[in-house]
Length: 114
Length: 114
Image (tube, rainbow over all chains, first blue to last red; front, side, top):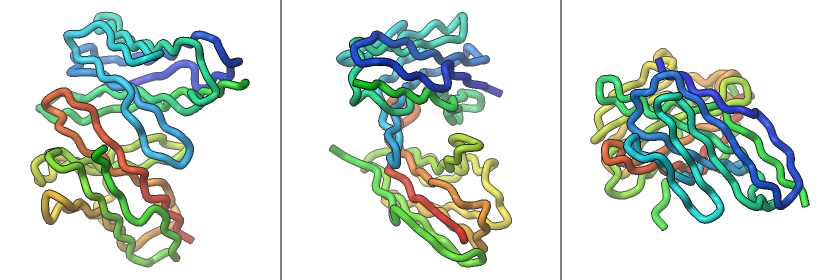
């Protein structure tokens, strides 16, 4: 059974810092890995999806990398802003039996203060 | 932008009452997920549909919960009878998972059982 761990659980940084959020998974036979953002009282918003054949994906100030062999993904946030404050979750679909049911990490709660 | 729509956004009711939550997935999406989110457990999968057929509901207490997709534009999650421990935020998500497309989440139903 896939297990997904996110470190750190919480992070508080001043505006402008470059950040690295970590996601690790136990079963490297993944189909893809997805990073989400969740704002308080809202649903999850997809940020980046990395297919198993890819090493990284970029969107604006966000860059996500994937190392299947080591079971790790990192989300890099450049020049952080207060608007980046949210909880960031990663999810990995379980491909056994073709189900594609995602397993989510518990998330990293990020606060960027001015 | 196409969105997953959930109703109601908030629900407060007394224990023992029936609760029905509704979800309109994005048109063209063939997979629908129901999740429950709590501080203690994080995001838990309750049910999963593909092409309107239920594929996995192992995470759902079957004595009181039921999930259906009467048509491609509507998914429902019912709790009968409701209990205080069912208090949580319930999310619906849709996607085309086999094509490496991201999941899209609704804003959730915040349920409080008194």
